[in-house]
Length: 378
Ligand code: SAH
Ligand code: SF4
Image (tube, rainbow, N blue to C red; front, top):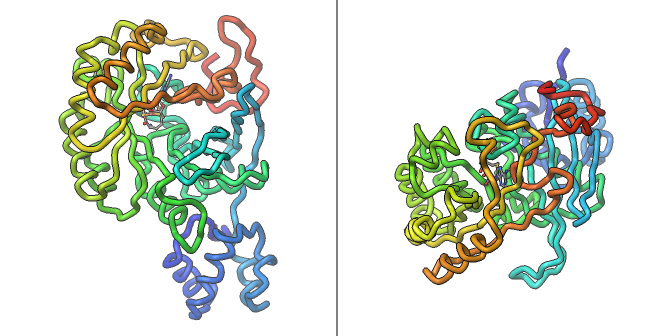
């Protein structure tokens, strides 16, 4: 008999499992199990010492607590760590831990940001993104999203202070599981993370953004904009044909009206494509619709995916153009941040998550497929 996986279940769902599978109507037991799973991070039922033996026996026989295996770990010169997880069905995902010693608003020095994946691959095929070249294999379960945090904390002994849904995949296309994971993560009783330190990044799916606005989660939203005209954005991000910029912006307006949480716009600078004065001016108008900041991101080349078409022509903007673009935005009153390229040397920077190890040797022939392959492009 297939055991029922408990990790990822909400308190209400645990109550149902208890009543239907374990014949226990004592709903406070569900609360105890919930606390063991998420606040105390139990990995086996035998650790749940305040449960009666009879219930424990039933739990052991009928239920399971999932784990994820870290199959490979690489560390960048800047301290960024990339973890390759093997999933039960043989697929793999990557998760990135970015340390920084910056002082945040609370005056703390140590920041540990974890970048989690939400899908194996991604169906949206953005031309600059390595993950997009994988296509979608499947959505991650709620447990698989949570376990990226739990396993990295267990493995490194670090406490995650900030969480970004910016790894592999489009969070809004795995809506239910992403929201379920956020409910647990932001539950004050679980005490995992302050919701203000959780950001969900999306390529901009208006219907999902509107729905997300009303979830009452109060986490931050980042929009991967990358272009200020529909013509260019559609070339870079094919999904823009279905959801043009104006539609995205009106859903963002609704998100802000509902949550009062400032928006982050992400903007990769590509040489000669989106780095002009006119682009900066259009971007500043977009950024001023509702309170927001712009994260300007250096383009991380993805040559290891052997790009073709427009993808093969993309280049990072020059240092001068980068600085000029920032200066123009600032002079127009936009709050601008530069997203650093943590982990670039280990292909852990934004958009580089594509299981490079699994992609086999490229033209340079140096990558050896040492881990089971998710895809076989070679
Ligand atoms: N699917 C979501 C979240 C994952 S992508 C989204 O698109 O927002 C996380 C971020 O990395 C996005 O802002 C994405 O645009 C950016 N990114 C993708 N490829 C990149 C690259 N090659 N260089 C720099 N940033 C990249
Ligand atoms: Fe998917 Fe985001 Fe990459 Fe686009 S940038 S292909 S939406 S992961």
